Length: 449
Image 1 (tube, rainbow, N blue to C red):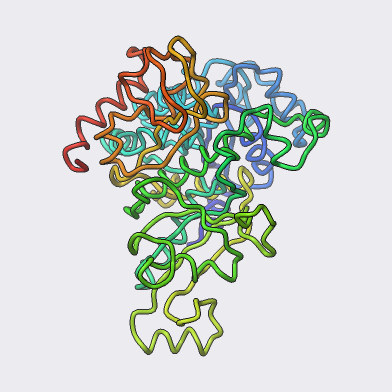
Image 2: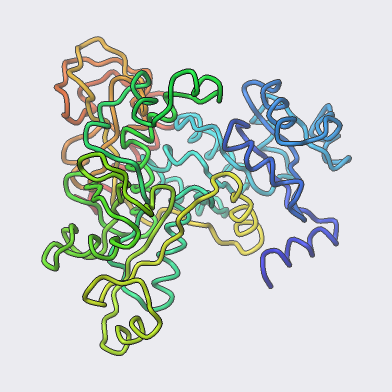
């Protein structure tokens, strides 16, 4: 039975999937816009640091005010309405909740939310991929130990890439490479919230008019978010990562199967079975026509002459040799697609992507020469950007994960372009995020060393 048919059945039986949402910002609002149009789902509650802002976002996406007037979770359950408040602990511990959607974008808080949800027997759809990037393998293990599921969020590119990889492998194709697109030039890694709009092609006035967050947008531009998402894909699929960071080869959709081949065959890959990100800009800054900037892709290999003949007969999108074929989605719809994950987790018992091992890491790297005493401001800020590295190399370096490079002080100077290590910073060792990361290193490091 399809997921939609199962949702209709649950609606008819009066047994909706009951969802708790933590964080009602932009991504969360996009999911909220779809919930009233999805059968068999009841959003029991929203927890947000600013309930008033959450209500404003609900109004923005078209929710009627009376749908969120419940004074308590008990009242919301009885009325079939939604409670809005600040108490995320009460929300994730409520016995009626089936699935928690973690949507704060704050990696340290997200780890705490996920662990609490597991402890209360709740499945988790984790939108905050920044947390998955530095401790996703252990989050997935903790969920399994609690008898629940941990999942990446459909609509975000990692889950969509995982879906393409799964399609390829289920069809019997070896995966040569998989990844997403991005607007990239090397100097973007030094971008700050002050330079981001120029690179994006917006004026500060246009950005302010749209209410756009410069730090958040800069986390995409400076390469941090592509590295974070590529790490999540690698850890979920077992695909390898480049030994010294993403290469961002420029390519149109037409050229993806050409560049995502091994170097020995004219491509850019160190070997078959890698993650990579395709740039929508030529190295001189010219925009590539028909790019994959907002999309995802997978390149597979036709191993036999018969399969390659089939590619040719059906006009498949291959490289000039006819051996490598790329399937792609040119767009992703962010939070508008999260319902797919919620339904899959609750009804099929299947995550839409989850870490199966520790293969990749994202290490905080200096954007400029940093001085002792400076305070790091995390992805998208003024001090560091995230570089994708093999987990084994990160362990060897003692690399500081980007997700923990928030609000901590440097103990010694670090030169521009250098990765930061644990020894460089005074980290808060009391957070769940720090403890889980260190536990993961102890558990997984021997396997990746």
